Length: 106
Image (tube, rainbow, N blue to C red; front, side):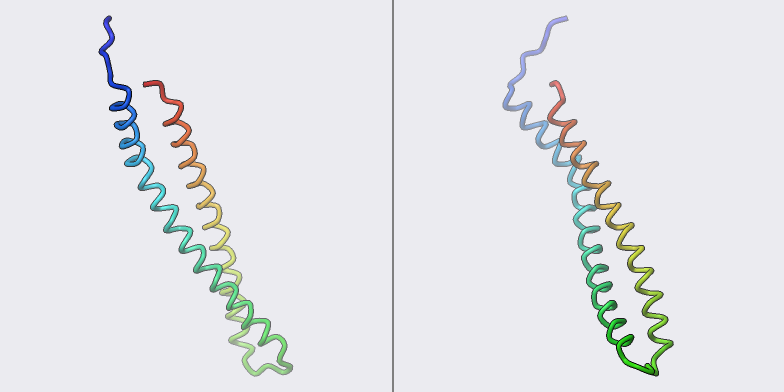
């Protein structure tokens, strides 16, 4: 079987285009998840400050609010952990695709 002569630069360019199209969706998704995680962390921080303030007030007349804030705070903390795990998995997926592309024999 004879080998077809290839232009190495053209092949490198083709692989670069393939890699960008293969990884771009995953990279875009990861960027979106990072933005959402940042917003959730901001909500957690501001809610934590409100909870601390309400807890510092003796005989707080807003106990119902405080209870709901704490429940929402716990829920947001769970969301933040899930988003963190998702970001880690997406980063690992992107890194694997980068390694697979660099290890390809073409």
